[in-house]
Length: 192
Image (cartoon, rainbow, N blue to C red; front, top):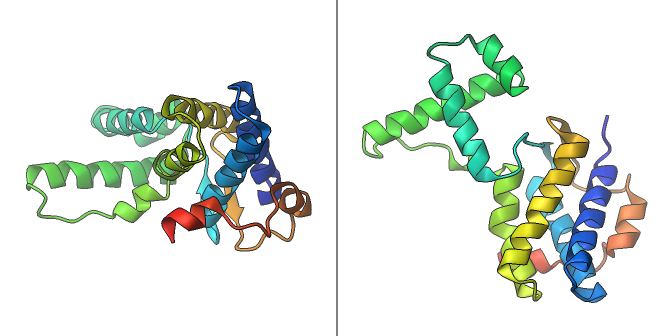
């Protein structure tokens, strides 16, 4: 089982390294790494975090649409094997895609659960971490590169894994000391 501290340590180190490699000052790298740590911890605390198999939201949307279209001619078990997903995940994707299909047909008369989509790691990083990185001086293009690099690293280490993110991280003292957990969060300044 993956410990949340190990996962968050990986996030911190990868973002710090990416920002440094792009030529930014160590202080910016530290602040960016702290922002990534906070982004994931704040948005997923008390929840289960699933590491998607695709490193961009757009790829995931296309994959989900392909699964939905493929379900008409291919068994659900075959789709699960082909896309390296669990059966419950295949069923969830099919339900979501069906809701999107119905929503499009009925001109937005049926509401969908947007919260489920917002909890996906990729979407959270793109919507919250990117603007935070830009706020500390990382150029927009570089912020996208940092996020893509982080997602590739997570794909390499945690692809398709599920991690429970507790509300407090007492099991991860090395992460708390490295990130300065008692310091105010950049994310809190923007989103609370």
